[in-house]
Length: 512
Image: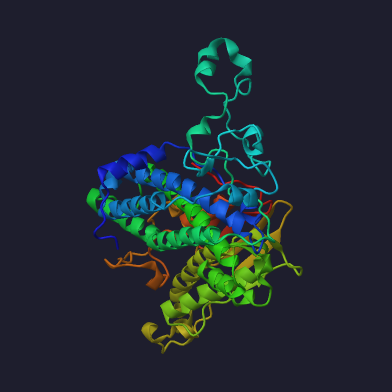
């Protein structure tokens, strides 16, 4: 992949220029405003936004990897990941810009003042007239929850005029975000539904969607390749299982911003597909992690891209239970995995969320519980059988004859959070080791699975265990939309994992 490609110094300096810009956060609420079948005009404007916003985020990733701490930036796998981001940056910044003539502008901005102005060639650019832009003139972001940083006159500095006068002189009358290409732009803009859009709108939407699809595929193996990079670093530095805190902080930031990039790309591809046919929508829901069979029963109308506006928590938990049980049976050669009991209220709990994220978090947690249950109880149960049947040999006892204690998945609903508790009797974790489970590459498996040189996640079977990435990354997924993942353990008995999901859906992206 990309063998003939190289990061030239000209491209690197362009990337570093972009990395200095501020990112523009996109809230969940903005992402769902498109509705189940978005207007091609809205997608056209969103495509313009994405083509400006994503290069800023990709550039920040390249810069972060270039300066990764403790020599992590020298690992061959880290360099490989950095080059993937640089290549994606190059492809997006080299896409031809769409031409917006006056006729198209009047269609795009039928219901409001448009913020585009023409240059000499007649091409329309994003206007820098901020007077009428509520996204900037309001100190709150679009969902009324997140305070914006602003450096306007009289705001934030008013109380200390005397000694910050020079600072005010040099700062512009508008927020510092001015220099960012996406400053003042929003991902969603309402556009008329019932008009016939010109061909170039569809052509540009397709061009951007195809570019994003290619980029998404390129970065599929990022998590595992980065894991490999950390593994290389550990071997070079003879580091034990405990990972340096600077690297830990770096990886947390790295993966959190990756979730944001993937979310934007996945959402945009899904919206593009849903502007066409329902069949495409179904394929797209499958590609984005909602593999469940329950999609046929409840209509696709409650999906906006990858976000489900009416996400049924129990149904998704059922999906995750089936998948984790199947992987466990394959791995241990069992006819039936230990029982997983779902305890949910009688009424359905529905809220707005990304099913792909929720399935991922539940699957990873359940996989841990299944493995702990089997590995903790196998010797105990075999011993018990030998005591009851003295003629038996330890090695002759089949795993399928053992009766493991069940794992419980309990769903509860509060006014602000939906909490899912996963309780196992897998022997728990020693208290001093609990902090380690949140560090990357901490695993109780002695042999970390090696990646093939041509590793590609699409053909990659999820291992039962081994990378030590399940919990830390699941926690980032939970925190991405304002939730959390906590773990309480009783050594010698078992572990409870609490997954808190924010039901207010008002959180904006946690941009570093």
